[in-house]
Length: 280
Length: 284
Image 1: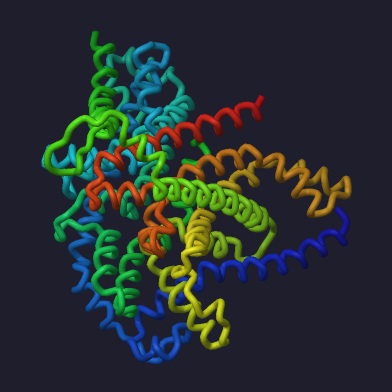
Image 2: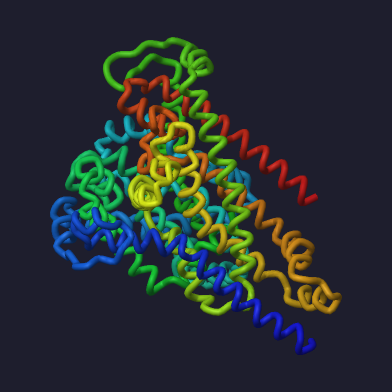
C-alpha cells in the first residue's frame, strides 16, 4: 500500500468519527433531557426544557420512589427476571438436548417442529383467552407470569440450543453412556457445562425481554403490590402526567438498574444479542 | 430401557406447558371467535358473523392499514439506517467503543419508558423550540395531529430498533474477509464502490435476517402506541394489538376481538410464509 492512500484514510476517519459523534446525539439528547428534567423543579422546566439545571432537586427522586412504590416494584422485577431466566436456561436447554440427540426419531422430530412452529405467534393473539385461562387457574398474577416467561421463548431457545448442540460432538455422550451414566447424568454433568456461551446468550436475551416487558404484566397483574417496574411507569403516568419533573425522576429510576448492568456488561450484552439474532 | 426413558421425561414437561399456555389459549380463542361472548356473562354460538362484521368494520380496516404501513416503513428505514451506521462503525474510527456503546443503548431500555420520554420530547421540548422561533409547524405537537401522529411512532420505533439491527449488521460486515477489501483496494475501487459492490452483496443474508426480525417485531407494535398516542388522536394510531387489548378487555368485545386475533394470526402466518419463500428462492 502506498503512503498516499493511508493518509487519505486516516484523515477521513476523523471526519467519520465527528459525523458519528453528531449522529450519537440522537441517543444522547433524549438521555440528557431525561436526566436533567428529573432533577429540575417546575420553575426551571418552565423557563427552559433544554438548559442545564440551575439547582439540583434530588428530592424529586425520593418523591418518585414513594409515589410509584419503587422498591416494591424493583423487588418484583428482580425476582421475576431472576427466576424466569434461571428456569428458562435450565429447562429449555434440557428440552433442546433431548431433541437434538434424537432428531433421527420421528416423535422427537415432530416435537421439534411443534415447538418451533410456535415462534411466530405474537402474544397479542393469545392474550384474551390466556388471561381467561390464567384467572381460572388462579394464576393471573406475578407468579403466573413465571411459567409464561419460561415457556414463551422455548420455540426460539430450542432452535438456538439445537443449533449449538450440533457443535458438541456426540462421542462425548457415547463415552459417558459407556461409563454407565444415564441420559440425565450425561446432560447435567457433561453436556450442560459445555453449553456456556449458548446459555449466556439465552440468559441475556431473556433478561432484556422479561425486565423490559410491559404487555404481559399489563394484562396479567391487577394488584398494585405485584407491579413490575414498566407497569408502575404506566400506572404512574395515568395519574401524575402533569408533573414532568416527578415523571422524569420516575423514568430515570426505571432506567438506572439496566444502565448499571449495561455499563459493566456492555460487551457481553451486545455479543449475546448479536449471537442470538443471527441464528434466528 | 433407561436410555429411552430419559429423553422423553426431559421433553415432556416443556411440551405440556407449551400446550397449556400456547396451544390451549389459541384453540380457546378460535372457539370464542364463533360466539358472542363479551368477556363476562353468558354466550351463544353465532357462527361466522364476527368475521363477517370484521371485514366490514372501518376501524378494524384502519388498524390493519396503520399496522402494516407502520411495520413495513419502520422495518425498511431501520435497515437502511442501520446498514449505513454499521458500515461507518466498522471503519477505522476513533472512540469506537464509546460510539458502539451509545448506539446500542436504546436496546436495553424499556420501550414503554422510551415512549414516555419521547412523548415529552414531541409534545413539550420540540414545541418549546417552535414557539421560541415562532415557527407554526414546530410549535404544534406531532402527536396531536391525526394525520401525522403515526410518523412520531415510526421515528421512535426506528430509533430503538436500529440498536439491535446495527449490531447484527456489524457482525455481518466484520465476518467479511479483509482479503476481499485489500483486493478491491489494489484494483483501485473507491469507498462508494467498495460499499455497493462488496459490502452490500456480502451482507445480503443479514438483510434478510433483519427484515424478518424487524417486520415480526414491528407488526406487534403496542408499547409505543400506549406511551405516545394511546391510539389517538381519536383512533388514528390504533395498532392491531392495541385494538385487541383495548376493545377486548375494556370494550366488551371479547369474542369479536378474538376473531380479530385469528385474522391477525392468519396475516402473520401469510407474511412469514411469503418471506420464507422469498429468501429461500434467493438462496438457490
